[in-house]
Amino acid sequence: MLVKTTHFMTPILAIVGRPNVGKSTLFNRIVGRKIAIVHEEPGVTRDRVSAPARWGEKSFEAVDTGGIAFMDDERTRDPIAAAMVRQAEVAIEMATVIVLVADVTAGVAPLDLEIARRLRACGKPVFLAVNKVDSLRREEGVTEFVELGFRQMFPIAAAHGSGVTELLNAATADFPAGAAPEEAPAPRIAIVGKPNAGKSSLINCILKSDRTIVSDVPGTTRDSVDVPFTIGDRRYVLIDTAGLRHRSRIRTSVDQFGLMRAERSIRECDVAVLVMDAAEGVTNQDKRIGGLVVEARRSCVILVNKWDLAAEEEKKVRKPERKGHKPVTFKEEYLTALRKELFFLDWSPVLFASAKTGANVSELFALISRVEQARQVRVDTPRLNQLLARALDSYPPPHIHGKRFKIFYAFQKPGPVPTFVLFVNDTRCLTPHYERFLVDRIRSVWEFTGSPVVFECRPRERKDFVKK
Image 1 (cartoon, rainbow, N blue to C red):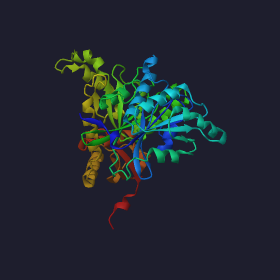
Image 2 (cartoon, rainbow, N blue to C red):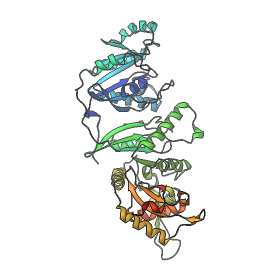
Image 3 (cartoon, rainbow, N blue to C red):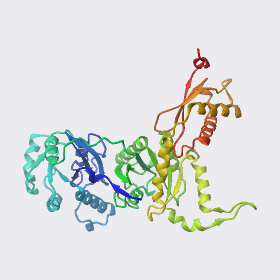
């Protein structure tokens, strides 16, 4: 599987600095959207968060990094803090230009001096943004930052936007002008699941790099991180989301923001990859997340991660309960139990894989490609109406409110997932059980692998379809 990230196709502006100086606020201001979580708590941003940006006629990629609490990752026993430093170092290495953000209210801190020394040695253009300069008194404190050794300083107030124009004019001066070529939007693949199911490990395995921070501590990823990349000539955007906890376990506003962002990522993705922990089986939280995918009407692939831990069990063969029946493997037993628990996702393909060893991960995008192709299938209208008519004749719907459900006409309307408009006698007469029966009939002809089948019922009288 040939994978490459797409960051190097355009100039990169990386934003670095110590914690809580306003890097994420500046990042959101540059990209024109609230992408990175902004909070007073230090260390909210942990992974590299990137997004396309434009300034005038210039297109580039903006990268927000976690706060650098030290420059030597051997000076801490905290693996997450050390990983944040390495993430920032990768961003510096990738960057075309670097914006160092400092906080005028805190003055020049020893860590600012240490970061500045490292940036001066990297040989790349560095622009010093002294943030939170929103009054004349604070503007007087900017001169103190001459000590950091940069020729130009830009007093800014990222929260209000003042000074950002001058900063970006200078930082993008050498970027090539001209609009980026128009391309079809890359499919957005959201990696979702409960905390510590292995979502970040899966992304790193796909990209063959430590693109996101991986830790045994649940909740390491606190924001949704977009990662553009290509496989062959096919572009995608991977979205690493915060682990979806139950709302009763949300302890801080940062966790709440992360949950909201992850739920939004599900609503805005093209395909959701539901990552489960093989050792734990289907949990209530897995069911809840699967329910969010169904509610959002998104396509889905189920990935059972950490399958390497079940390798010994997989080798075992269960004896059949009755003579003459075929022996059952552990994987078959597991899949049967999974399908029973996630019955509402029975249309989702299931992949058993290990992000740690890489086993079967290469098959994920073959499945995603199948799902994409299924989403594009268009059903012939006469054939659809014939199939539905035969279904109603073979298994008549129950009496509801004194009448049976009738379909006068149906057609498939364009949309991201297979959606069928049904003109019916009474929308209240379609029971969930009978709707599932009709969906199964449609899937028996058009499989629609990995995508929900949606009915939109509209009440109409038969006479509306009688030719005059």
